[in-house]
Image (cartoon, helix red, strand yellow):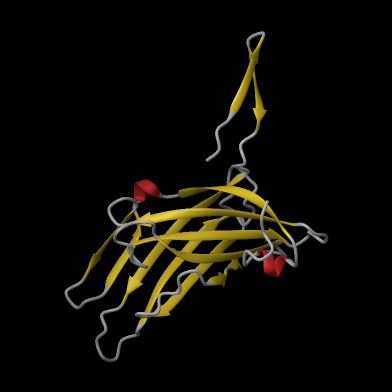
Amino acid sequence: MQPRYYLQALGTVVPLFASTTLGIISVTSLQTWSPSGRPGTSPDWYIHVNITDPDPTKTVSDPSGPHVYCEVVWQYPAAPYNETIECNITDATGFVNWAWTVTLLEANDPDPWPTTNFDLLWRAVNLSQSNEPVIVWSGIGQFEVAKNLQGTCAGSGFCSWSLKPEDTPYVVEVTSEKCWGTWYEALRGFGCGK
């Protein structure tokens, strides 16, 4: 987060430099799953995430419109850290000008784990942009059991974790950056920088 600077004159406070935070990502549900490993059961591990409102430039999300659904699926031990995965827009009644990706990041912690202690990086691009540079809106959410995740592990071996009710929705601040290339490349972080 960047510091904010203000000028006070004649009793009025005026921001000198605006924060780079432009909007929010409102995570309304997140669930992780690790399987039991028993014969005949699915070997898939996953993270499922729903986000209210595909427009990350808003500071207040509209829960009545379309949503963003992201799914990260893998089989142990190949957790897809740093792999960019496309998200889907759901519940849309018409065309939505936004495309989204999610990237699973290893938590900067002594005990990271892809379903109980991890970070998610979201990137969004407005598809109506036709010229370079392409503006990308992004934010990182940090998720950890006992902090903002709760759940259980069963005796059979599977574990399921989700956002705590008191942390729902989980709000991620969004910043923007310029990227050179296509919006497809920008959603994957190529050609981006200040």
